[in-house]
Length: 227
Image: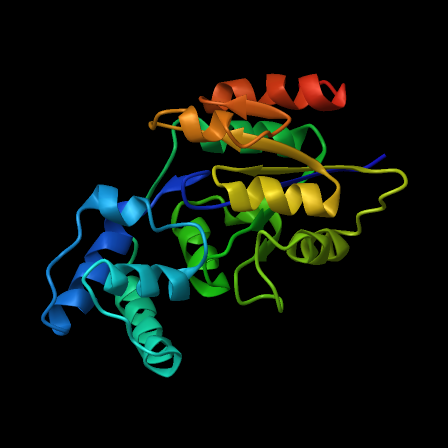
């Protein structure tokens, strides 16, 4: 039996809000609009950068049409890349636990709604890209989370055999849990450095509030010991 575990990125492996905020506020300023606060932006995350851009402009009373949003989203993503992810950081003990899982025979993948390019760049900058067999972003496939086909696409690239293997999705958002349910795999909800109310409301198989507790959660839902 093979063991597969997929992770979301923002809010799950990393706190990248400050770089997203720099990019978005630069875009808003370029259009004469007031800046957002960190808390405001955090509430808009989870559905990819196009939806993030739409929500940011809506918060400032703007409703661009889809074609304009396409252009704004390109501008935002360019500004985001230009931040070089200077303020983005891994959550405490994330790397240690990822390396523990890898050593224990788990195949690790990223399944994020963020575009694939920044996902790869961030993981490389943080020194953990080598741990991921597949890095998939919101533009890697025809659908994104919460559509379960996105996770099935990632699992297909990994060689997942539903009749024999185990798979888990780890994430902080309803999209992660709902995608896991649609793909008929295990789901773990996480809440790091934030209140766990949302994570506890997602009906995941387990909730984790510190990375050092993830191995125990994996064991509790799969029966598999993590060394």
